[in-house]
Amino acid sequence: MKRGISFGVFLVLVALCPFTVCAAQKSPKDLKPVGKTVWNLAGGAFISTDGKIPSGPCFRMTGQVTAFGFFENLKRVDDDHGTTYLRGNERVTEFPPRLDISILIHDFPCSFELKDRSFGPWLTKEDVGKLKLKLYWKRGVELRRTNWVETPRMLIRTLEPSIKPETNDLPERYEWNIQFALPSEGVPIDDSLVFTLEAPDGTIAARTSARL
Image 1 (tube, one colour):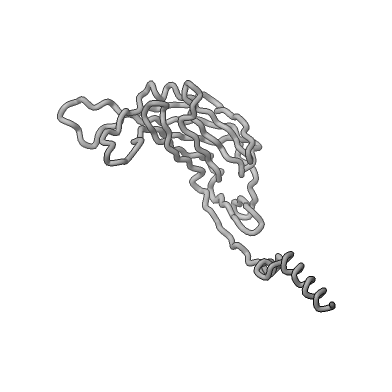
Image 2 (spheres, one colour):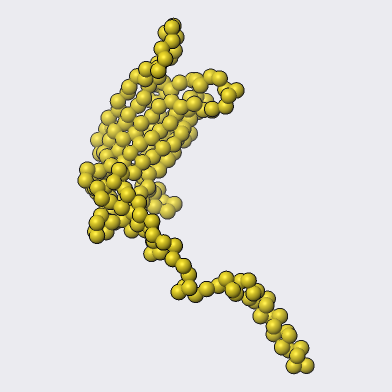
């Protein structure tokens, strides 16, 4: 009788805590540290993504987020305690009052398949002129709309072909450089800055984010 009771208790213990699970459970003091990773943020934050005009050409959008003096000696430290941003021994928790944004846009093949011999159509001034740039601060799933301090400055450069054809029948290709300042006073440094390019019909032609 006693043997039967002991065997039943043993079965209950096995059901509640299999050998492999119990052996894998360790107290926090027995867990190995994940180590520390240090990121140098001296160059600021960068973005890069590919986009597409609805029923039109594809393009690549890259960019950089900087601020005079702010990113110098700034580092991101990831360790067992989480993420910390440091400049020397000083802990940094917020962005500076203003960030400088530079965005570069140029056409890009929609496909690199060998069967697709044509890389057109190319991105035109009309295509880019219809796109609407929208900016958001993102924390978790929350998006907060933001905007530039002054009207962005746009520079358009004509791209010269590396090999000029005998006949001048190639369409002109361009590169767009958009520069503007963004208010960022009081924004937590671990928030993301989301960039979207929206087509006239509301379609998102491109979306990316910059995060330190």
